[in-house]
Structure formats: structure tokens, C-alpha cells
Image 1: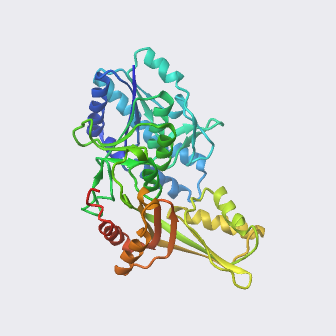
Image 2: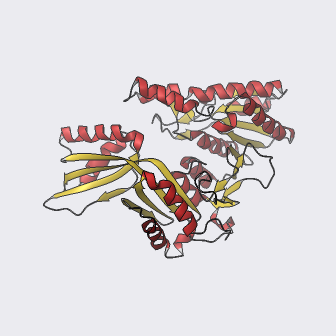
Image 3: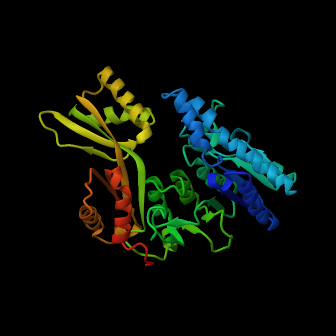
Amino acid sequence: MPVLVMKFGGTSVANLDRIRRAAKRVGVEVAKGYDVIVIVSAMSGKTNELVGWVNETSPLYDAREYDAVVSSGENVTAGLMALTLQEMDIPARSWQGWQVPVQTTSAHASARIQDIPPANIEAKFAEGMRVAVVAGFQGVSPEGRITTLGRGGSDTTAVAFAAAFGAERCDIYTDVDGVYTTDPRISSKARKLDKIAFEEMLELASLGAKVLQTRSVELAMRYKVKLRVLSSFEEQSDAAGTLVCDEEEVMENRPVSGIAYSRDEAKMTLLSVADRPGIAAAIFGPLSEAGINVDMIIQNIAEDGRTDMTFSCPVEQVKRAEQAMQEAKDKGDINYHNLVADTDVAKVSAVGIGMRSQSGVAATMFKTLSDEGINIKVIATSEIKISVLIDRKYMELAVQALHDAFELEKPA
């Protein structure tokens, strides 16, 4: 039978009633003749609760134990979903990552999937199982330890399963009915996109849009997985949601497709660093080893052999970054006078494949922010995106103003 992958996010399985509603959607697809692989997240809010307990217990925690704790939320959901389907007389079984097995790297809290051998689940399908309910977000390392894939990792799990099993498509069910030009909670003018290019979705995901995890879009693009984003709270139709696809399939041709934001950013500056060949490697090597997700980087012009180095990272990684820099300084690998952390900033980004062929996006963006009295702290660009760091208190104003400036509420 053909295989369909269905992923349900935390809000879609937030309680038993929502799990029953999701199970009914699964039942519809089973009735159509599919063998279904259901990927589930933890119930809404559960992962945050578990992470909070870990941080309260040990601020500089052992990442292996972090994974053991936070992966448990998905296990609960998988078991409850399988039981619900069984009550509907649908042969279903729950699967934890190690049982599949979802083989990953050993990078705890940010592991990457290396392989998903299909034999175990396929054998159960052959025996009559119709639905495999798999705990998303988790896998097993070569050492046999539980790993997690980073926040939003259930999306990655779903796309990886779709690729591994040659699924007809991968449907991602969430609390929104598709991908919007920006967060509808911030701008009432946000418009749902019928289609969006893989590259645009990849940028939006990496820049703070929480509809899909970055790695899941990378995998979908690489393996040409047919990916749809749908709402679990609305009536389903074949034309529902947003299709994430190749650039050639997107009809709209405008310079900017969406405005993304990331609220929980920090700007860190190493003041008066000794300027010498290899200093960047000496700084960012330890940060990488500490698992710090560095984004924007700016180095000032050197004066008298000293320079300032600024970078951004998630605000929850500031303490770990400070520790990594202090250890590097103590070893004599780097020499700086002070490390200043600004934890009250946000990142706002304009994204669009049309930037490749249309000029003036940067000028419009900077003038719009200037007109609103918003100061830009850091700028970073790529072929299809422009990102700025600004004071967090201006984030929503910036998103709304940029959405209006690029007229994203209007179809192309």
C-alpha cells in the first residue's frame, strides 16, 4: 500500500480531545488505502515545562540527560495516539525513536538524522498494522543514548520518514492553516501563501518563522518530498494549506515574500580583541564546540592592533557562550578586555527569491525602519534575505511597518 506521513504538532495534540480529532484525520487516510506513519510532538507546553525543570535543576546541564528528560513528552503523546486509534478499531502501534531505529549523530540537543532503516516498521505493516505512531524529535546515538533533534525536530522527523519510506506526501498539521507572509498574531494583514519555494521557506524557518523547522525544509528540498502545511482545526480539502515546492512552481514574482522575526536574540560583543591572523577561528571555534548557534557576525576596523567582534546568538545560549569565551581567554587562545551581552534585542528579516532580480529592497527596508524611529544595531544579508537586529521593544512595530511597505497583503 502507498505510505502517507502525517505530523501533528503540539497544539494539535494538546489534550485528549485534540488527539481524538487528529486520530479521526488519520482514520480518513487509512480508509483511503494508505499505510500511515504518524509523527507526533509533545502536548502543547509540555516540552517547555520539561526544559524548565532541567534548567532549574542544572543551568549548565549534561546534554545527554537533557535529551533523556525532554524526549519523554513525545513518548506520552505517541502512546495516547496509538491507544486512541486502537479504540477506533484501527491497528496501530507506538514507536519510540530507538525502536525504529532513528539513527542520529551524538550531538545531544541538536542531533542530525543519519539513517532510518524501514525494515522494522515495514515488517509490522506486512503483518497488518495500518498506523505506526512515531515519537518525533528523538533518535538514538551510535552510543545507544537517546538524542533529540532540536526544537521543532518533529518536523524533521516527519520529512525524514517520508524520504526513507518513499511516502506519497508529508502533511504537517499545526495550529495555522498554512504559511503566511508574516505572523498573523502581529499583523492582521498577513496573507496565506498557496505556494512557497523551498529556499524561501528555508530562510523564513531559519530566521524565526515557527511553521517549519529549518532542517525539515532542507531535507524536503534535497529529497523532493511533497510537503504541505495544514491546520488540524479546519475542514480538510485537497487544496488546503500551503505547498512547499520548487521555485519553478511558484507563480508569484515579487521581491519579498515574507517578514520573519526572532524575539529571543542576544547581541554579544568582545571588546578590544587582539587583532591577528586566526583570531576569528580562535573565537568561533570554541563557540561551535560549545553548541552556540552564531548568526550575524561583525568585526570592526582594527586600531592599534585591537578590534571589536560582535555576533548574535539565541538568548538562552548567552551563559554558555560567556563560559566558552572565558575558558578560551584563560587558556590564552584569545585576548579581549570585556564581553558585553545585550539580551534585549530582536531579529527582523525580509525574505524573497525576487531579491535576486529586483533592486531596492534594502533601501525600502532601511527607510521604513528609519521613518518609524527604529535604530538598526546589526545588518546581515544573503542572496534572498536581509536581516537586522533592533531593540526588542520595536519588534512588532518593525514587522507591521515592513509588511505594509512591501504590500504583502496584496496578491502579486
